[in-house]
Amino acid sequence: MRLTSFTLALAVCASPALAVDDCLIGTWQADLAGLADIMAGQMNGTATPVGGSVTMQITPDGVASMNVNNMVINVVVPNAPAMDVGVNGVSSGNFTAEGGRWTVATSSYNLVGSANVMGQTMTIPFDSSTGMMGGGSGTYDCSSSAVTFQTDGPNPTMPPSWTRAG
Image 1 (tube, rainbow, N blue to C red):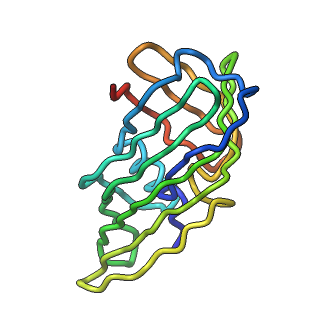
Image 2 (cartoon, rainbow, N blue to C red):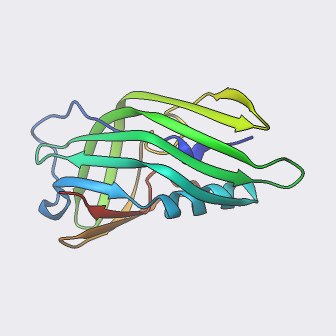
């Protein structure tokens, strides 16, 4: 089973030369329904957010950190029982964004995933080379209160919708 849309997290050891659009600087909260939609599409099933949070902080010098805190999404795929997929952890890397284009190069990726299926818990391995927030590039649109990201290529590497958290 492919769970790459849950591989979330980013924190960066960036150089001061990285450019970041002023509108992106600050703390952001991911829309879990958008993450569930991505997972549903990847798994040819349905997915519903249950709880938890995903936050991302972006600094002016290109340091970004993503914290996945007790995120749980209920997943239903054909010919399998419903399962709750949970993720916790932090990831980090270099973040650049200007002129409507973003790029992430992850330097640290520490997510722990699990699935609860019919009362049994199994560990889900996450990998920065294939998972969300494991690096990538694309386009963005930003306002003072919201940002949307689109990923280059067929597999999303950035949660699509965020609102300002602080």
